[in-house]
Image (cartoon, rainbow, N blue to C red):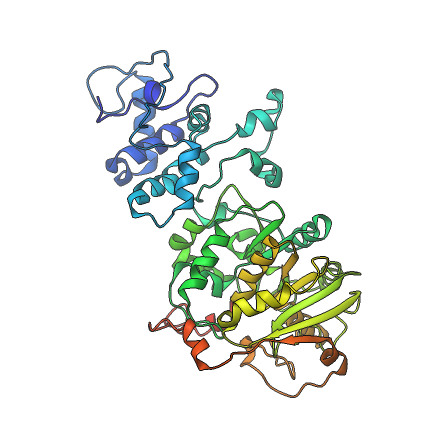
Length: 474
């Protein structure tokens, strides 16, 4: 009967795993709207009662049955939904193809939910090459350890190699995000690059039209950021806010903001995250003001400075950023050179910035502090062979630490800070001036038109929130 799926013979492989009531309930949720209306506890109790009495789950009079499973070979044209790995990669390469939109939704939502909740379904999908390249448990752990291994504490950096290329999380809490400390250690130990996503990048990706203080909305930038989110590079970390997970969010003084943010945009954001990926923390650069406990900041700063210890550094920054200028943050670097870009709408001169960096040797460590443009530029420079670090607001956090501002964001004279009203005060530093090797500016006003969307932009996350403009910036 095509209307009522046969859970055993048509759906799952029973050779290694046996289903729980939760497995069956989750599968039925994807098959029937009726089950979504019922109380979960009552629905599971009814399922268990029917199974105990060998009754058909679909309320038919005949008894349920189990028969030997025959693995079917997909026809040349494929089943109605073709879940073969090659087909999945083809769809991922053409996400804008409307003809494949329905199939893409199945890949992003239905399959990940089944794989994440149903070990039986996982086995079934693997044996048919339905989006899973290797069996997670069989190849990673000895058989005798399967009953004792804690899958919530495994090394996802290793295990991720054995899972299919993409699976959206059921919720953002399911993501695997390293701590800021582990993110930095990974960068130092393995010479990795990192591109980071904060509020401005997310707003560009999901197109919620929330205004950035220094980068107008831009369709080309949005597409590039989405490409980065869907990328899978061995030596490139994708940094996302660790506040997406409760265990990290509780350590921040802005936890209530993050709860509201997730509440508003989680449905859009899950579509651009991979539950099978290990993310770095984009909050690695936010190490002082947001921290509830600031007692470990000195040790963290020392760890952070290890990124450029003894390295030749090339800084790509806004003309008023002055990263490390007037302080000793970069003093342990072998040398420092600077390419200055516009303080606002740097993406309008993106090609010039990229070309200017390519004039430098690939042995140099490239640090970028240029808003959303830095996110894209760090990705492209990594692809070009550089180690590129999207370093963000780390220097401002260091200044706040030096000024002992506690949990207060204060203006630092001579340095642009979008969170404190922009640029105030004068700046004089001869050493900084000598480090400048190039300046990239807007040629004329026409360049700025590239970033204008023509759409009305929202001022804040919520109608009653004045915090958004500065809290979530990376």
